[in-house]
Length: 126
Image 1 (cartoon, one colour):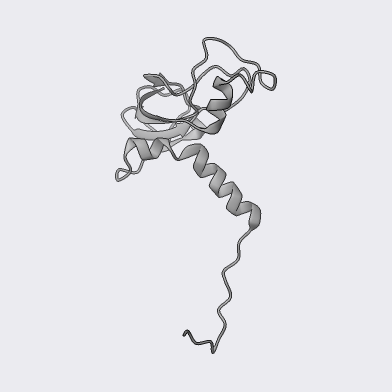
Image 2: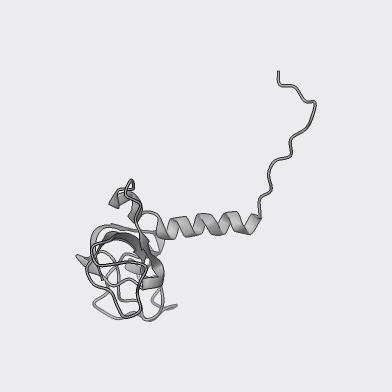
């Protein structure tokens, strides 16, 4: 359980709020929007050993039916596997913007399997 200091909103949250996802994923009300959050660990479940109570963390709530739990709240339950310790130099607002957008960026780079740009020997710049 994380005491939320900042929550991130994504396009999926707009779609949920507009009712566009209701036909694809069952919803349970009351429904809390928000998938991403950064905050302070208030409690941990059994077997969680990579974060401790008091740690500053960021992570996300999985989008799985039924859609109900979110991060636009004072406290959010985040799956342990989706939480990591926040680097000290990263503020809460920036950290809360990273989980889903960052995962999408990594997936895009992985999908194209970029290679280093080949250096042409003997070339000169003008």
